[in-house]
Image: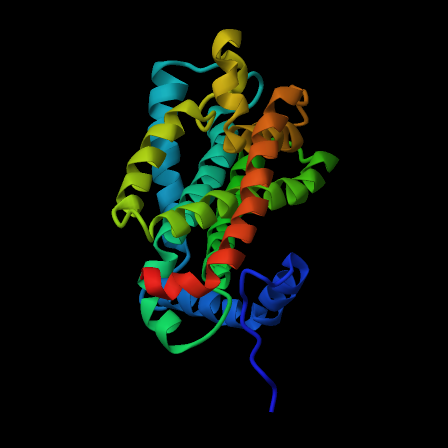
Length: 271
């Protein structure tokens, strides 16, 4: 009979990462269950996420593309804005669902052993389904407006990896902090509703004055959106200032893994 190995603060980080990997099928099962629960009850299914993206795109197009006339160069505004919208939706989904992952799964935590961090990791796959649906919509609009794809599209894959790490970095920290601040998930919703306006979702980062550009630099999603547009539209590579935000989320991500490892035994008591 195989002995169950449980994480603890004395375990090495490599042993902890192996333990997380050993429970990957548990995370996969949770993710598949969430996807089925999200889409199985409606005939429109995944098209709901497309409708959400289209509604957001229409609103931004009306305000920023038609009324304010944001300059997007030779790129039609709907095609320019959509990558920012779907990237922001993925990030906000991952952070929002992760913040309450531990509390909402108290019944599982009380009955079963598994690395608690796997609850948050399970949120990635459902988010990627919506992200893929949004990208399909982008491709359709891309060709409707007569644009031509380029080899820069292959850079989207490492950019998505950075996006996942960014969402997990913030999500893992908020899930732990929510054990101490029970209303944190509601606070996170309000924060994300504000931060979207200081993120180049519906405008290019280049229009932000130099004196305020640091606000974008410390925002990892801003860099992800800017680099994704550079890859998709074959435009100039964003300046290196955006790497600051990437460094911040990398530190947050690594530190969150250590925090989870050290708090494994205490999480049940904190619920």
